[in-house]
Structures are given as structure tokens and as C-alpha cells.
Image (cartoon, rainbow, N blue to C red; front, side, top):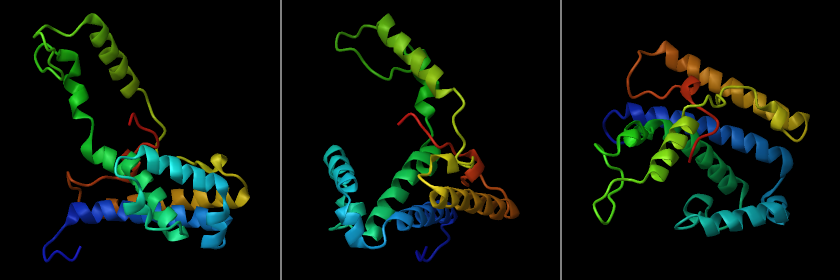
Length: 189
């Protein structure tokens, strides 16, 4: 992306982000006609304040210096990206080794002893939870919408994801590609 050399993986990630940003914008603009309307919503303000408080370093770097439709759109798109595409990019490879704490320790006890049975059971529980089927991002989420307009925005989001998937399938396969059909709508993070 303007680096002077090919950045195919970055281009792939940006294509996903662009779909998420379009969805967030489409949905937010159904309910907020202006920046002032958005700023006047006390629930949005409370959510942003709490999210900013709970996020190390805050959210202003993504949101911007004031609450605007563009800033909240970017923030929502970033949250979708982090929970789907970025999570898929990073994977959860460490979980593959957590059952073998005597060989591949993920934590070292101060006294040098082994993990307790309680820790082992928590790892087993976590492994189980991570291996249940999760909602695919490309499924129809229109039932979550507040009204028919919102349902249409969710259907358009699905259409955009399917279009991105189709475009990627027309290109040569590559190990660095993240395909929309592989993404899940909810994660363990």
C-alpha cells in the first residue's frame, strides 16, 4: 500500500477492514444523521467512556479527538477487524501446547514444581471451549438489527463479505490469505 514493494498480505487485511468500515458506516448512518446526533446519544457516550477507560492507552488513537460518525465508524470497524481477521491472522497456536505443560510450560511455578491439577483442568476446559463450533462471520445476522433498515444493513454486510470471498477465490490461492469464509463472529478474546 504505497510502500514501493508488493504487500499482498496487508492488501488482504485492508480489504477485510474496508468491508467492516462500510458495514459500520452503513449501520451507524441509519440511526445518526450527524455528528451532533451521535454526540447527543448518552448511551453511545457511556459506551465510549467505558471502552476508553478499560482499554490500555484509551481509544482516542482510533476514535479521534472528538466523537464523530467517521471516528465511531473506524472504531467499530477496528473492533470487528480485531475480533475476526486479526484473530485469525494470529491464531491461537499456543493452545495446541497447553495440554503438555510438563513439556512446553506456559507458566513456571516459583518453586519449580509442576502445575496443579486445578490449572490442568482449567486448561482442559479452555481447550474444550475453543473447539466448539462458532458462528461464521458470513452467516445472516439481520435478526440482530433494531429494525428493517438495520436488517438490510446486515444483509448488505453479508453481500460484501461474499463479494470479497468470490474476488479472492478468483485469485491464486496463497497461504497468507485470510478468507471471509474462514472467519468467526465470536472468539475467546
